[in-house]
Image (cartoon, rainbow, N blue to C red; front, top):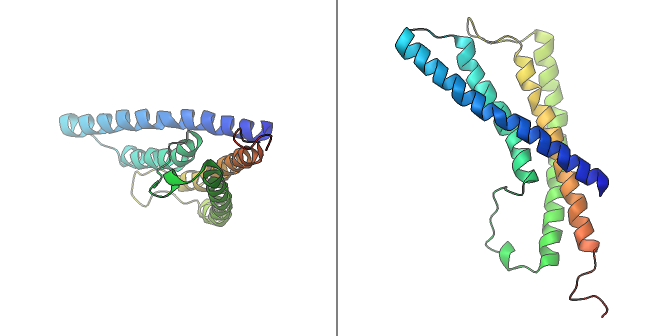
Length: 170
């Protein structure tokens, strides 16, 4: 449990840090709009940075939402299930999510490696160099998602194994 709690704390800290990319993106967009419309000034690199910040926020935001238990759920049937069934479904979902996230992270490493080997940058003149730095966020975010999923799995299994008040002593 301590490892799972530590993993969730790590995800929360990363999520809170990455959440600031939202503010940075809003400020950057405001700057770009004001610079373009009032001063006829614009840089391709700053426009690209907008979507880089959005991509990072979205990638890590998925994990943070799961950490905060704010993921989107369809509770049509789930809400009617008894707690042990809900925990079993959550545990299975966490296991599958963790495995899929690890596979995506593994597959995306080659994508990042090729980008780095090519020295990939923006195709646009004046765009951002080092596109591989952004692409490196893909495996990083999915490894973090797997860590969060496995931490959730540990908590769900512990809750399933814990004695329930309605069955204790029977």
